[in-house]
Figure 1 (cartoon, rainbow, N blue to C red):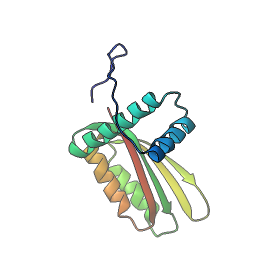
Figure 2: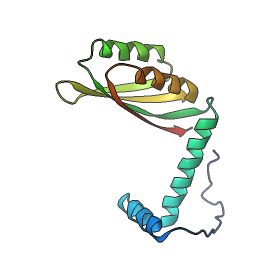
Figure 3: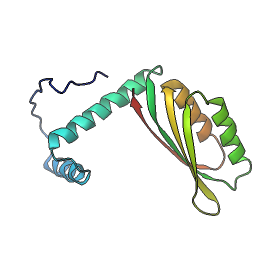
Figure 4: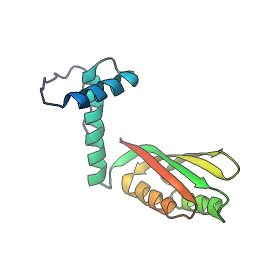
Length: 141
C-alpha cells in the first residue's frame, strides 16, 4: 500500500448512506477521538485495503500482535505454546504472559515478518486444547 504524501491532493466524494448507519459511524468516530469524519473514513478505508492486501498475498511483510486466552490448567498447554513459539522464532519479536486468575492466562505476542508464516503460527496455536480465544491484528509494512 503506497503511503500518501502530506502534500498530495485530495478528492471529494459523495455517496449515499442510511441515516442510522451514519449516526452510528459518527458516534463511534467521535468516541475514538477523531475530530473529523473524513479522517475516520480514511482510516477505515486504509484498514480495509490493508486487510485485503493481507488476504491476497501471503508474502506481505506485516507487524502486529496475537492475543491468546487459554486455560493453563489443561495438560501441557504451556509447554505446547512454548514449543510452537520456538518453531516460529523468526517472526516472534516478543511475548508477554499475564496470569488472569487461577486457571486462565493471556499471552500477547508481537510478530513481524511474512504474513504466511504468521498465519501458520496462528493455526498451530488455535489447535491447542485449552485455547479459549485467539485474536490478531496486523499492519502491512
